Image (cartoon, rainbow, N blue to C red; front, side):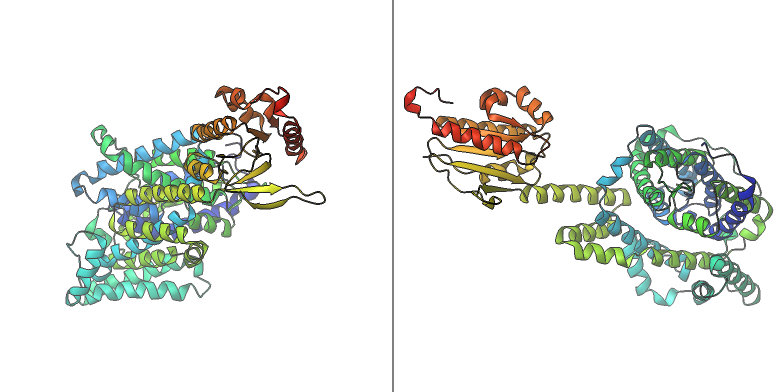
Length: 560
């Protein structure tokens, strides 16, 4: 918040950027509120409050905290199961819970948690959300409102009842889409949404008057207050039922926000702290929640618009929220004349734009695991509540990652050469008596990989006075399961008059071996700490192994 004080030289640029944002996002915010299954005006309340408050508290100077399609659909997926009379109270409670969750993550500096949501999960989820957005608008777009449960059955029901489509309504929706596409090829590209919405709505009003077309307007489905939003308190009885949806929606918003903050640097060229942005988005949702705003988060399109419109500081977002409030106060009667199929057409365009073909191709071409995760997440998004679709995708990706990592572990033998570098080859199946075997581990040495690690170690049975040197460089913590494997292998070697030597041991691993009793079992003289010089620890271990083999056990050597 050290850059809150406005600078005179930036005021004009920021004011124009805020005006541009307001004009472009007023129709989008109303459309997003429809996706959330609430009064379209609630989307405007979000812009009035979440956008300027987010600007005050986020670390990213240009981050636009506003409504997004993904958050709106996720919220609507939860709200649609409640009656219209109780939905307002549910919305307030839900958004406040989202804000509390995000603030807690920000205060605990848990921005790093976003790394656990893979790109394949988010690609599948966002593509599924795009499909839901398009299908979900077909009622307002065609005038046929299916009573089927679920988006896919609703689409099938529409196809089977094509004769019930209201063609006047559909014509307005198509006109909106065509106007947006045409205006984007002109100098009015930046304002294509607002102009398309105004023109199509004007045609709808005329059609209703001249040919009684019965095209629904915003005023037919919702009251637009001629005042700023009033304070509404949450319902504590709903908290337990809304915790899981709130956490999931909060995570979706934070992941989107992290992508924004790490794409648009601050004026000094540095990227903001993700945890600080978590906090800012949470405070924004707390501010909007008490006044019936829908969930808000870092918007990539809104931020890009602000930057391209000439924003120079966070005051551009503050001005944007103020201008939206002025529009609601002065032009509420015009908002009521916006045609519902025009809003639906606008949302359908936004849904199509959400489908990132390049991202889908990248995931598809990466590997089978990423492909499967994306497809399952996409499919579950279409048929499951969105919060469970995200959790399923994350859980599946974690399980597949563990499976993949456990199966990629390899143990290789390094064979020293008299001249030149050592030769690497697969570890032998069986140890040879009186021989030194140097082993190097590739992969993550964790509990799920322990069975593969144990099966890759050369068998000891029948080998006498053999030495196994295990290079442990790069491992700080190997866990209790791997410790148990090393314990069994050490005991097996010692029972056959052989020994295990560990080389390249980091200080943290050395302490772990000491705590678990492995240092005493292997012998401190058989543990060679890692040094800055690569190979130094391994060479020292090799010399010690040769010296041990050179000694004759017949001369009273104490055996390990």
